[in-house]
Image 1 (cartoon, rainbow, N blue to C red):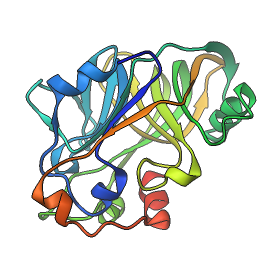
Image 2: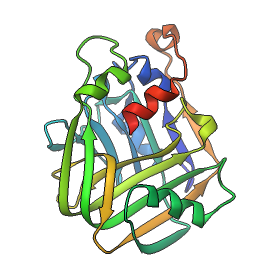
Image 3: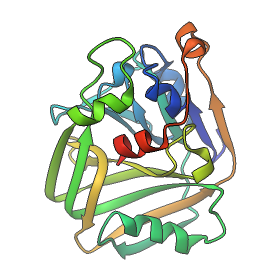
Image 4: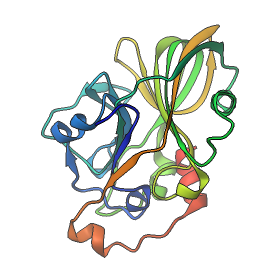
Length: 235
């Protein structure tokens, strides 16, 4: 895929409807980009794609390298090439959006991809524990997600920002996952504070390719955009 194009398999509305038993093989997904985020079948934990390698961030707090044959019911990737790299301090999660806004104030209806590398004073992250019954909606998993807080930790954040109008196709606003330098812990970012300056690479994206599943479950699912539900689970 060309630099700074986004590839996405399936849509968030499908996960909200519980469609998560099959998906795109990792071997095919990694052909579309070098970094990204997503989840695994049965919504078991969080996914981060970094430098072409896929990791599963598990609710147990551990990380494993995923196998090429494993399937992903929802995942987003890009061949990331930063259009600008900044060195700055982040006092909270909201600062990420401020950085993106300052980078291009005229990109509100475009997408952005970014990677943040450095040391963090605090990272609060969650991982979903997975479906407890077939087709369990993603919104129901929020109350049982595992939340961990890490202090004085070095690592990488991979994220995307989608326009408000795309809620349900993607997660509108910020959506970012963290993995530590040692590849031992990580998760979906809820809160963050950097320890001094971090490296913040960013790119504006105006080319998005979405591949939809063709399974019977996907086509039979009753999908609606649950804005409150998505915000509740994605933090």
